[in-house]
Picture 1 (tube, rainbow, N blue to C red):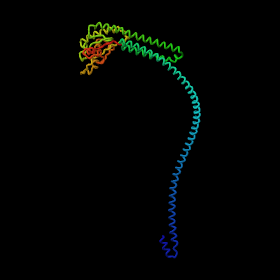
Picture 2: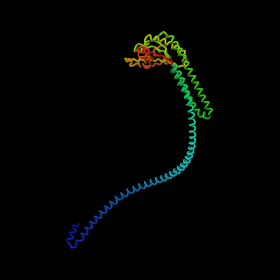
Picture 3: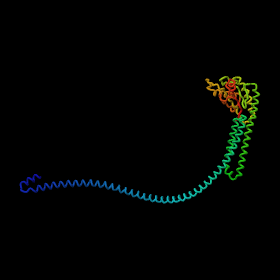
Picture 4: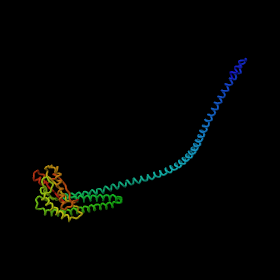
Length: 364
């Protein structure tokens, strides 16, 4: 079309109109393109605005929630203020209670000082009782030395002494519990001291009575055994014990009882059982068997030294006495080796005397 116009125009002298048409066409195309772009832009802008409105709605919802939370925080803040007011009131009351307790503590401290002074007085009184107890212990020591001179110290006497000491201890505890009452007057203190002295005398008399009773049975025991065994020179009485020569009971370096020794020990056991049936049950007597050797060293496959030999011999005697009826709880075996000689000389006669089995009647 444009070409036709050009051809038409070429026949005339004026060529401006075709150029204007071409420019107008080009302008129209540009405007259409711009309109298309504007429509597209409006479409995308509408989409963007729609998304923003949704986001704005979400933000408004969040703002509403934040408003609600703020309201709750305000209510919580008010509750906290009320709690602080209550705590302040409680603190004021607690301060008042503290002041009252401080005053009470002062009174208690005053009472504690008074108690300390009282305790000091009781301690001084306790010292007096300790001196009394010490005097009783010294009296008991004198009695014990007298018994030692007669070589009749026994396990029974030691047990009796232990019981006396326990009684004295119990008495001290009783006196300690009564100190508060005893301190009321000096006259009551004197009366209690008199009671303590009287108790000590009664305890000493009871101990002496038990010892004398056992001594009587021991004397009868030794007298009868002396009659039974008087025809044997290998058996002798020395002080408070019977002494059997080892040669009578055992072979050299042996702890096995021989026939002759068994026969003599059987006689001994019969007399012991006869006497023991007459001894009261409350006198807990014990027959102690002591094994002794000479100082010649020994080393065999059975015995490594004299300790083992002396102990084994004492145990053999105990086992034989048990087999013939002597109660096991009335027997005790001890080995002394060569360390308790009765003859310190260095010859065969001394060695023979030192090799022995000793038996003594004691108390537990």
